[in-house]
Length: 372
Image 1 (cartoon, helix red, strand yellow):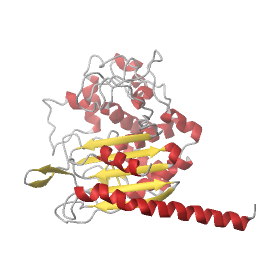
Image 2 (spheres, rainbow, N blue to C red):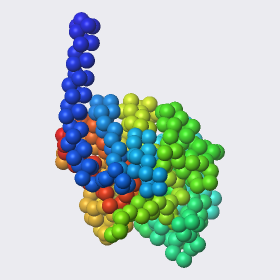
Image 3 (cartoon, rainbow, N blue to C red):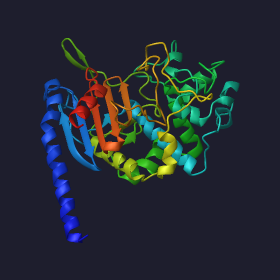
C-alpha cells in the first residue's frame, strides 16, 4: 500500500478518535460539574484511548488554605492504588532473580512464627496469605494521627500472632498487612528503601518525576492535594490518620500526568515483558483449585461479601458489564481513587478525589458508560 495513503489514513483515524473524544468531554464534565464547585475540594479525571491521552480534567481545589486549583499535575494520595506499584517492584526483583514467588516469610524474615513457613510471596501478592489486618491489631497501642504506625512496627504485631486468620492458600481476604510486608521485602532484598527502589526502577525510568512514596520528614509531595471530609457546616481537612505512614499498602502519591506514563508503560510492557506480566493478570486460585471469594462477613475492605473475586498481583480482574478490565480502587482518610483499564477497548480511566463524599469507583463507571 502507498505510504502516503497510509499516512493520510492514520491522520484521518486520529482525527476521528480526537473528535469523538472531544464530543464526549461535555458529557464527562456533566458527571463531575454538579458535584464540585471552584471553591471546594474535588477531583482529577484522566481518560486515555488507544494509547493517547484524550482528556485531563481538574475540578475544585487542592486544599482550602491556598485554594490552588486541581490540575493534571496535582499529586493525590493514591491509597490502595499503591499496591500495583508494590506488586511491580516485587516482580522486578523476581526478574532480577533476587526473589522467588514461592519464597516463604520464614525464609525472608528471621523469627517469623512457624505459620509463616506456609506463606509465600505469591500468597501475599494475591491476598491468600491469611495474615490478619494490622489495623485490627493496633488497639491499645501508642498510634495516633501524629504518632503514626510505621512499616517496621507492623511486622512485630504480626509476629505476635500465634496463628493466621486461615491457612495460606485455603481462602481469600484482602490484606493491607500483606502489602506492607511486601514493601518491607522490597527494601530487605534490594538493599535500599522501598521508596528509593520505586524511584530507581519504576518512576525514574518512566519519567514519573512527581510520583513518590511519601515519608513525612524525609521528602515532600509536589503540588499536593490534601484530603477532606464533608460535614454539615462545610469541608474540614482530614488528610492523615494513624495508618497513613505505611508504604506498600497505600503510601504513594501521584498525578494524572504521571499515571498516563504508567498506563503507557503497562500497554507497551516497558518494565516487564508480556510473559513476565502474565502472573499479575492471572486470577488467583485456592490451593485446591477452587475460585476465590470475598469473605462472607461484611465490613472493612470487603466490597462484595461472599461473591467471587478475581485478583492477580496488585490488580482486580473482574469484568464490568461484560467488558474485560484490570482495576483497583483506593480509599483512605480524605481520599477516594480508582484506575480502570478496559483492556480490549484500550481505554483507561483514572479518577482521583480529595474528598470522601465522592465515590471514585462509582464515578469512573459513569464515565465508562459514557465512553462505551
